[in-house]
Image 1 (spheres, rainbow, N blue to C red):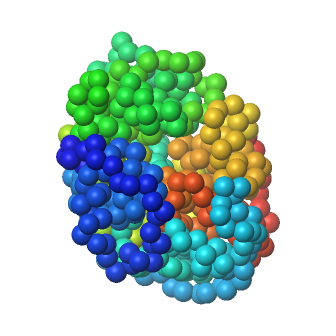
Image 2 (image 1 turned 90 degrees about the vertical axis):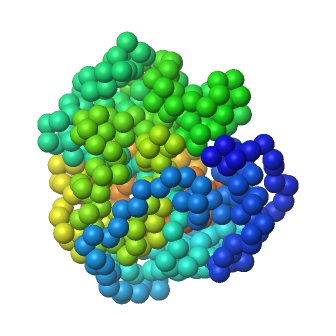
Length: 434
């Protein structure tokens, strides 16, 4: 596994247009990806493209099959969705505003875009990927972890207001004492584990050590580390609850928490509780650390339609893709009713960053591993290199998309204009912050 993060580097060149990879990758790129270093795999270049779509070639992978068989999605095309316009981000080389159709045609890094309304596919385009191709969800996978924890909270197996160390005996006596499960769910722990640009280059940074341990990469100063040991060593920076500080390591704390409470591995927990109920078109891939911990913070793969099916679990149309309701009204109400303040999210580094991504700051805050919650109840989750998951429970709407670009994230600019275009509207109830 160390070879995955060897020190050889790929020459800094303009990324290859993704349409050249639709029918497969050249052998040389596979070799280059195996020799890519830590940063190159997540830079948005050619190695990133290969890794996004072929990650099971590099990491141990748990395969969750479609146990129910395919519960097909009907189609009811709405061409007007493709006419919805959005401004491009300031870093974009594209000249905007562009319609969604124009964006997908011009953005050489855009792979697929799918909109599902009332359980029907109303917009679907694959300009640079095949419909059946698997792709990493990146951080859009994080709500998978909060969903399972919320189920355990509803069942009385976890008290979200107790310290997480109540359930993790080997974490007692560390800086995690006093941090509640709810703090971890909302990324409000005050722990020094935040994902930052600087963390990519500092071998002593906890966030970087989390990622390195997940891939079995040798840390320059500590050698190969175990993920649980890295998390246990996290120091405290601030008091819990003061601000939103984004950290993938916190999602991994939820995975470890679920495994400890259920005394089972994450893949089986999620399969039993969630995915076995879903009539997916393909297998769900959960990619694992060398010691078998599912990297649910982002290393999860599926095709785009099954990505949308996960989002549909949060909508009234769950019955069209699942045999049981796995996102209860209680869980959905908890996401909305326990959302923190706008000041809370904007006090952290990522609040203003997220506002720039969607082109508006009219959201309330983040909540329970979802990056944004709006007053109309809509939910947003961003993924590295431009993956997106947008869910509107009240409009019965899901928007998902795949991209490979770390700089131009303009695909995110379309979600609110589409949702609020009037194409899907009823009178929307307000969701008030706590």
